[in-house]
Image 1 (spheres, rainbow, N blue to C red):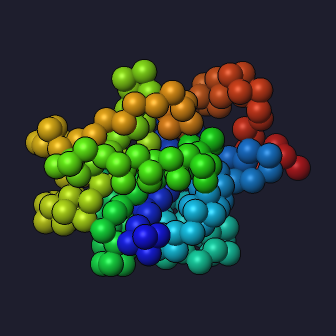
Image 2: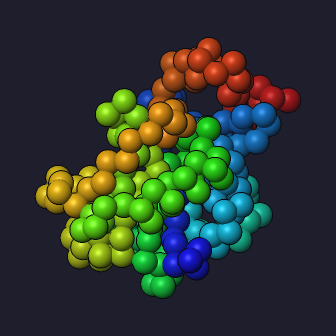
Image 3: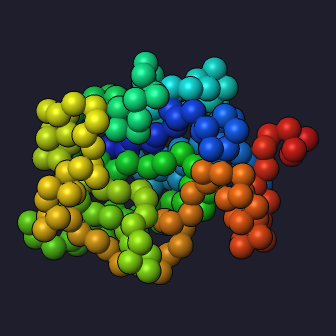
Length: 211
């Protein structure tokens, strides 16, 4: 079963809202967020994993290359997240019939959260192709979708992604309701770091602040 699952981790952005710093290198308990994401996936037994880099490749690549993942470089990361999604989907093994797309800046996503998503996806209603975790009716991440959706996305230009597919096919989207806030927490701004630290009692720090 795990052989048929492909994971794309998006880590190509410029992080302009956080001061143009690679936010996936923020550390929780001394571990960069990108490393936490990769480990969380690996611990599920999934081996088909692609990490999409763009801005800050020189900083992120040395961390990611320690793990058995496929690195894909988005040559035009400023074209937006969907451009990185296209790069990642093309980099996955074609044997994947279930695709999970993760953000590299979700501090609390753990192996159990991924396993819960996969279980919910396996039990999704018939005739649905996308699963979106929803917390208090708000969408979260990671998102899962079928190979059918992957093929449709890749047939379109790189401005078209899973969100656009959902708008066109809302009846085929399973909005899985959960109380797990891990799916809703990501880091986009400096205020998000302060809010995360205050809300969780944890310390999310830039690398040099941990020295």
